[in-house]
Length: 401
Image (cartoon, rainbow, N blue to C red; front, side):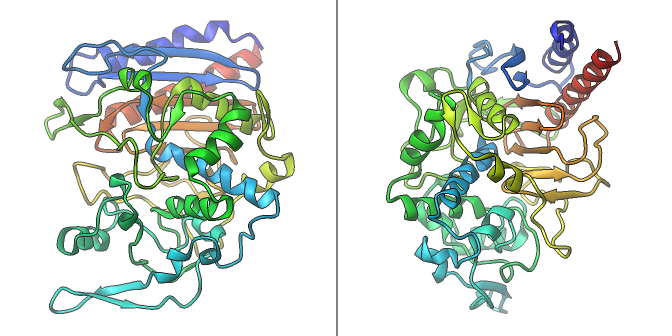
């Protein structure tokens, strides 16, 4: 398929969101689209940092936040393939700390948390599906209370104590987005006997040909890192001092990686190619086929993410009113999306307004990267949806020609 004519349409989306004179623009963006062979579009616009005026470039490094999750999930699936992990066994067999956690039933009159043992053990499958009982303090008021009044550390600190949160409900009771994949990374470490960074380097990044992605940035990566910007209530953007920690105490499989968009496209292509990376196989085709299916039970529903810390997240939801499910470890849109994304496609996002989709049916995927808080930023999220919509419009026009 000839995709050469698609570039002006994509460029126009990037130009609009970075050059708008109104406050609703984004500082800078990198966006790419790939087919099964390689990138068919690469775009970079705007600035890495509004304070320094450094230009955004295609090799800019981003804190990729929760777009880390599918990479961590891939390391889990490899353990399953090798017969090292039973997804339905108690996950505490591999990560003993999980056996110490209790369910939070609320707070007493004195404000103290009321805790009880869970009715069943957490499984690794539940961790991958976000049904184990964990949440995030920026999406859950009970966790926010635990942070504000009882010193529960944020997961972005990447410390071991941040993992030791109470469960919000009994394992399997419902779906809630949270720190589940960070624990899944601990399962991998328990099985492999080494840090997740080493596991990913050997088992995932090497066969993918990824060299520009890590929990701890090299000096070169640090020099190319985009600054996170905060948008205030008036729409004004301000560069922040915030950064995910290099040399973290825990390699957080749920959010901790830094990387460039071009490197993430290699990961997307692996999923388009039934588990084959550019330097070798990452997953077996049958594992990929299993992992992309909805894994939720009927009572477990993907729901809107309520932004309870306004500086970190707005209320956010992909395709409101559309049925969504969860695979290992992606969101699945059950029906065709308004952008044109077909039913059964995969996707997710990262806290600083990074978004991707993987369309195995058509053989394309895309990634949109900005560094803005709070999540669900109207300019970046809206720009991403325009970008994806432009892709499907071009795809359909090319096939009709």
